[in-house]
Length: 363
Picture 1: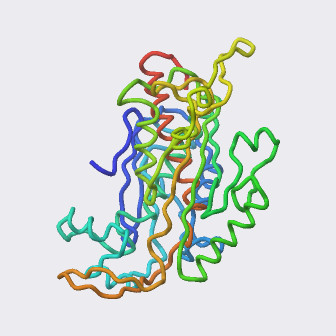
Picture 2: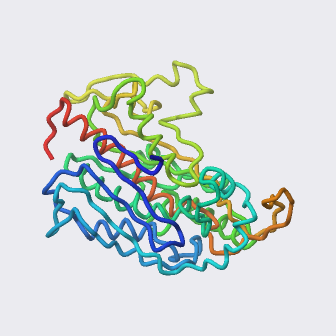
């Protein structure tokens, strides 16, 4: 089933962008975990549309309706089912999409895969609206990880041609993340907002890169070959609409390095094994080495842009299409909490599995 992820913790995403609503069923959480509703609401608000100039003006409250699995502020151990009602849909803006295939969207592939029975309004089941449930599940996963002292962090490392400093650079400089626009550098933050505004005003869009990190994950998590940290995390992240690249540590930059430059040398610090540098992103042989797990994620430019584009109409005719509706000029800022969420969920899934298998971690 394509909308299900996880082995020990599982999520099942459901709904369509312009249907009755969207939601998630989460299975595998232990009974008795206290749920911080304030933290859940904060994560949902980070993803929620209509809050600033670089977001779609679609207005959704994203108020979670918990149908099961949480009682008196604690998990019950049974499946957690959560529903988010769609309130601000304008389906008439998508009337042409049953016959016109939008460039770089799933209109064509979805029609082929589901033999024309898919709901195309607002992207249907392929819409970024479906990430609401991912954020809820990831927020719970963050709370589960925090019980083991594991912290998830993220920031926009690039918007268009504007680059922010890395986590390592910011940590060395003692610089904190800007809260209004999630970058470390004030100069980069201002430049990035200008780049997004330029894309919006010219009826275009711009891509982004996001860097996420997990701190304090113990060494020894993950299994070699196909059940490793990198494959599991990448699988979760590629489930997010608009994600086109995932790299660990120095990623593709390693292709231009020598071994003497890329090797992370081991040393001991107060009884704890660490590495000098973290080009491997905290993973060796698919297994955590105790250093921060660092991942960079490429987010494509929003495919829905206001400019007229020639596209294929069902029946084989080429026509100009001007996409209506409300869309983000840059997916990056709202994708950040989604990427953190699925990163957290994938790691929590592995950690729960390690607890069950051999490590005896206490939840």
